[in-house]
Amino acid sequence: MTAKEKYQKFKAQVFNAVDEGGKGRLSTVVTSLIMGLVFLNFLMVVIETFDVLTDTWHTFFHAFEVFTVVIFTIEFLVRLWTADLLYPKLGGGKARVKYLFSFMAIVDLVAIIPFYLGALVPINMVMVRSLRVLRMLRILKVTRYSSALTMVGKILKLRSKHLMSSILMIFLMMMIIAVIMYHVENEAQPDAFNNAFDSLWWAIATITTVGFGDVAPITTIGRIMGGLIALLGVGLVAIPTGILTDGFIREMTKEERRERALLRKQKPETVTCPKCGVQCCVEETPPEDTEPITKTTKTDTIS
Image (cartoon, rainbow, N blue to C red; front, side, top):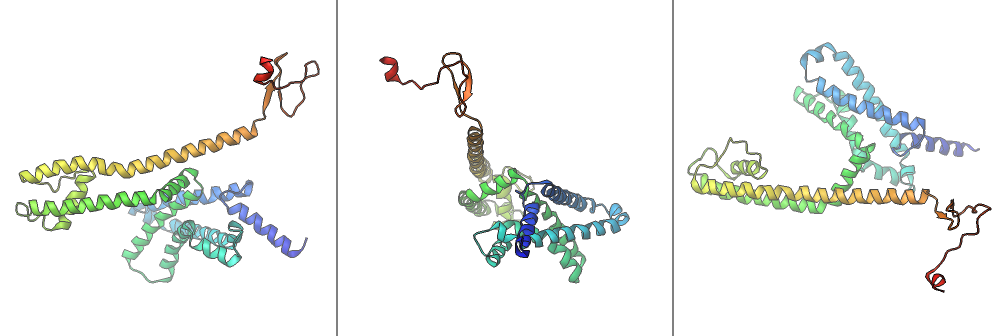
């Protein structure tokens, strides 16, 4: 085996270890390590909101953060190195560029960039808190290893046009309602409905049926319109929900059909002997004490 062949073999083994579809014990260990670090980081960000725990365990938290970033950085570099195996039809350079602009590569970068920004660039406390919030996005790395979350992303992508159309329609309706309510309620409540954007807050709370109650119409026309808009909101909010539900049903149906087709391929075809009732595979020969199995047609039966 030449040096190049050994290199390609080693590269394929590394790719199998880090790829979410990889097989073997090493792939399982790598997947478990990444998943465990993601959930521990998410828990760490929550714990750091308690000042008492942060002051006591600050050194441990920082050491764990450094360890996590090192592991995630190595993972990202390895995935970038083996991108040509992920996209075999592309060359090495094109495959790496395609991977860099993929959704999961962006998630991997977001998981490590806040640490390097905080270490290399002098920042104030506001930026530190913002970077801590960005660390919460590391939970998105879980989508790489979860088939259910992958299905959610696939449905959002397939139904993106319909979702964008429904969201745009809802936004336009809210803007129209906000302008109308401004003209209706401005004289009675100049502080609450000072402009269209103040009215938009009420429109959002009403159409989404949240109804915080901090702003409410007091005029007769305003109350009538408010009631009608609240009823209209039930139907408007249901539109994106219906689109996503339809997408889930279709994808789950496809998945069930794939599983059934796979089971049919794995299950051998059997036939039953008309004489003794013994079942055997089509590829197998029937028992010696039975006559050969022949398929009968309707014409044979009639004759």
